[in-house]
Length: 134
Image 1 (cartoon, rainbow, N blue to C red):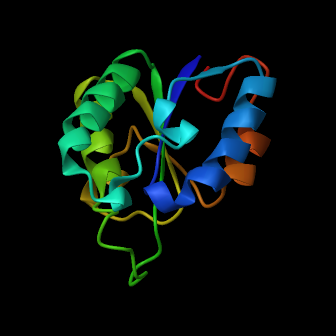
Image 2: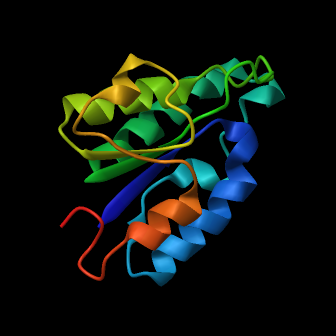
């Protein structure tokens, strides 16, 4: 499967470990933002359109989106503005398989076709040899 991982940028290193696990399971992770080149905190807003274009292309190459959500009331740096919500909406519109890992942050996380796991370990434990979506 081609999988896009969506989360706030501050969790990038954590998600790199999840990407490694998915790759070891035989999947492709399309999220180029994990390489660390999309740091909006550097203040260079002229590059943000390039970041968005790359993320769009990566989502279009995917058939699964896993979004990592945040607990209510968590303080998030202002440079991390919630692109994961846009990415989630795109995945829903494109009829991708969608998995929420963490709390259900908004009403769209509660759609019946969206799978939900409290942790990434829970998602991996539920994964069957033919895939969690088989």
